[in-house]
Length: 197
Image (cartoon, rainbow, N blue to C red; front, top):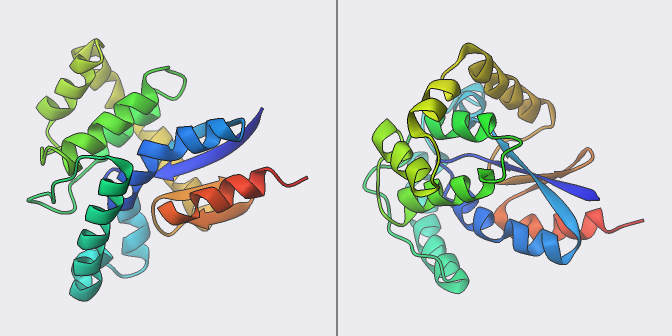
């Protein structure tokens, strides 16, 4: 079955919207989704940024928050502007990396996004991440410990390096072969590219 890579970062606003719809759009096109967590921090630092571009450029930030309100309303997604932005999604990214072959991975990702962008919870806190794991009926302590293993940390680091190699500079991004599509609004274009002969 053909595959669409979905590269996401838990601090990314637009990745919240994309995560809510990527499987629906891909399923309609008979594509599988390869969920790829990565870290934007090292990528932004490489560009000389020490914060989200939405904070660095206030006019852009004001537009983004209003745009998120419109997009979430259109998708039927709950949305509350986080009291802290961006939040550190490192632990959640490590768990999403650990869960590569697990059937609960996509739902975990969606619930972490909802915790951040709908419930205004601190997704950097192990207790919050543990609540999400517990809501899925998963062994919380075991997963939290495994996610922090040296091997798993290295996997996420290598995955972030792979994102850089692919030319990814923001999230969400979609990759088809070596073709890169950036932004929630490029999801349909990426799927259409998959459908080309």
